[in-house]
Image (cartoon, rainbow, N blue to C red; front, side, top):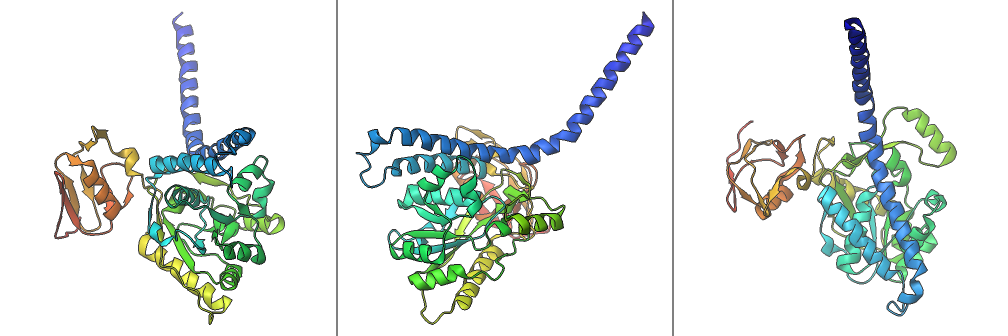
Length: 376
């Protein structure tokens, strides 16, 4: 009897060890590659909503005489805006630079997934009342179920002539010159991969519109493309023109879009010169607002800070480049948000450590006080 019990225990131990090994093996895979599926599900939910909306369009057409998609766009914009606020604490700096009327060409850096552009477009729809038409890669139009999404949000394959004509009609348009290539093969160093492309410059010159540069901080820390097998993925992309590179992430890092100063139309500019101006403008935003190399150890403060009755009750020690930040008392939430938006760039692994843009700060009740920096 005792021998039978020992044998049974051995089997139980083996099973437990095996289960632990499986957990160790598959947890990183689930975290890294399953989380991006959340965004894919989100997109398909958007498509599902649009199909329902289209089915009932005859009941709504009177409310939207000119464009029955308007209500659907605003509803989905609110949907995406909420998701960006909750998961990434997303915000835009310089939204006033987007004109309330008239045309402009917006250029942006293309992340592994252009999630920031979804959020930015939502902001424009909700707060500016304007739809930003965008140029998408042709493979997007071949994804099953996505044609309605492309139609509702006016995504086009985009030739120079088509883009120019839309701008001349007074629309806003956005282009990521790096496109799918930049999305797949870019990394945490945020180097532009435009491959001498200047079609966007020809569009801006022909339409006589300004170019507005745009960059989102920590974009590649939220989603990344794999680094292994680079030669194979390059070869496969050149052969198929389809983005096969696996993407992982959906990390809840803080994202903030910075909109730079518009580059005005100058009839003396050549496409080559204007393309250089645009590249330098976006590189300037990257240099000013992005830590290089980026790190996806960051966390969105909305997800890691404990909230009670709209107040933070943490007493934590915060590590910065310049010194130590002490939260010695309850901190008002608005005060915390101001501090984070101004100074915090990354949360390093937990709520207890924050890297700031520099300097030392002490947070007290309803107050932020700077003090002389010291090495931590």
